[in-house]
Image (tube, helix red, strand yellow):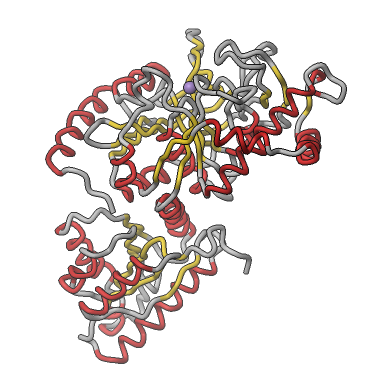
Amino acid sequence: MSEKIYHPLEVWFVTGSQHLYGPEALKQVADDARQVAAALDAAPQIPANVVFRPIVTTPDEIRNVCIETNSAPNCIGIIAWMHTFSPARMWIAGLTQLAKPLVQLHTQYGRDIPWDSIDMDFMNLHQTAHGGREFGFIGARLRIAHKVVIGHWQDAETLAELDVWMRAAAARHDAQGAKFARFGDNMREVAVTEGDKVSAQIQFGYAVNGYGLGDLVAHVNAAGDRQIDVLIEEYESAYTVAEPLTTGGSMRSSLRDAAAIEIGLRSFLSEGGFKGFTTTFENLHGLKQLPGLAPQRLMADGYGFGAEGDWKTAALLRAMKVMAKGLDGGTSFMEDYTYHFHPDGMKVLGAHMLEICPSIAAGKPSLEIHPLGIGGKADPVRLVFNAPAGPGLNASMIDLGDRFRLLVNTVDTVVPDAPLPKLPVARALWVPHPDFKTAIAAWILAGGAHHTGFSQSLTVQHLQDYAEMVGVEFLLIGEQSTLADLKKELRWNDLYYHVTGLRGW
Ligand code: MN
């Protein structure tokens, strides 16, 4: 069996039961549970290792496994299954201590009712139907948000739902103790990219710290000629290189500068153990050009990135990159830039000054150099490409002062109506759901940022599971959304969060 995408991360499979039906029934429960856990572990759709844990039948056993979960460094969450009936007061001591995500697998060992042979022994063993409700009650009573996956454990849909949940749990896990570096502060006077770093660290687990440009410049200046040569060879094999950047071209030295910036950024980030970073065009002291190519390529390697000091988007993008690991399609930093208001088909042109991840490129990116009107530095090198047509979504994390809100809008990515020969940046063109006008109005009323994480890999469910795990508000603008409902949801959510306060895992 090939290694799991998230190896060595693991999910613990915990089965609840009781002693009511004697040791023989318990042995059967343990055998069945072991088989289900092994099947999940062996399923190629399941991205993390699934570890069978001995069945739990007492409050102490349940409390112990929950405490062990919390301190197991590779454990990202628990799958709980009530094969028989596990009186749920036994779970109170454990669940109130559990600090990692929980999914209730509401499945049954035997898929079908054996019409000819079913007797009371079969009924007593197969009690998920009501045993799972007992477990659900204590979750509701304790106000513990958890995911419930319903279906037979061999069914592809069940596995797909567990896959999504595990991806979200892996992203949550990845953020615990994660570090993000900021070069320069926020773009001056911009509101939505601001936020409370202390609240974010409490809520998500990651730390954001600022570094002087001089610290980065020292790494950039340390890039050797040979290192730069090797990296440029890599560029030449991966991209179509524009004439001025080729050997002997008029801007060749700018390409060498861009390569040095990439080498310096990589060295800074790996030396410091960072999972993402931000830059800003207002603070480039000591850098010859605004980093463009470097953030593009670092994003493609899984780093989170936010422009103009946007650390919330950098961290969200990193989480989305972790969730999307191994899936088809790309995930990028994005900004809704310009509209096409034509009555025959309104759409949004998404792009940024430079920094769009080539994981969303349709075809071979073009490596180009063009002037940049702001920042006051030399012309920056960047990759230019289109995103392919197909379903996608934009996600934005905003700080409302008393809480974070994760806003998601599903979109159809479309091909441009015509080539864009003079547009010197990578771009994606999309039609948002449910329709252009409703989506844009809803996004604006919900306070969504201009910066987003754009993904053609993830679904709404990935982000919803993630939001529930980290305890933030989740708001969807999707195919079924109406403006009237969304306005109500905004008001109700304000009330809900005001009354309940924040509740993370
Ligand atoms: Mn921007």
